[in-house]
Image (cartoon, rainbow, N blue to C red; front, top):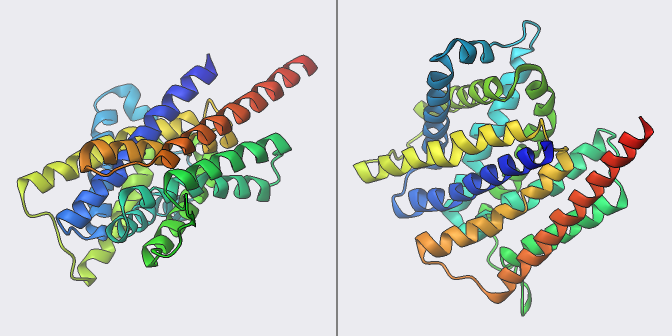
Length: 305
């Protein structure tokens, strides 16, 4: 049952994160809103909404309590890394490349998570490596790095560097934030990291010439970004960490480019090639391999106890 809950939460998170690239591309490319402004508004609105929701009930207020011995400097730094800095990099990438290519951030994040967990001396077997490689190949097909003509690297620019940095910051947030989620719960972790990220980004805005949303339609899209692409998926991602190992959760992020391409086709009129959809096969294979491996490990541990 824990696996079912974990996969449902991961699916909600993946779909929500995928919509970030569609909304981000529309806001930065069609409406010329600055990435830094979007990052600030995204987490200020999402963090504020979640704070108000939790504070409305006694149980919610208890859930927002932070352990007394929390290192606030490290916590705020981690929060800013996984929220405002990551989002700023994603939106800067969306501004320079298409929706599908911008989803490279989530295609690379599982590999970054794998490397980070290996760095922290957590055991990852060969089947885990195979699953991650299958997912990575599938992601490369989905985002059109691998095409019928070979590797397509000619159009890559500074936008891709932003995307790489976004993947790195998200891996740091996921791996090093796990301990905080275990100590304080997903609600408190989500609220305070979002607000910490918004506060730090807010300190940057007065020192630049940034473009803010100008029309009701643009502000409405920012609201969708804050709720559907931020509040719900961040809470679901943090909550899923209680039910799924990091490697399984990391592999689930490979589905984000698939969802991003599907949403781009539906809402932005972008097209998808046969190779892109073939990439979904590798992504599904990666998820199946890793799920089978972790279930086998769980049964083995249960037999030993």
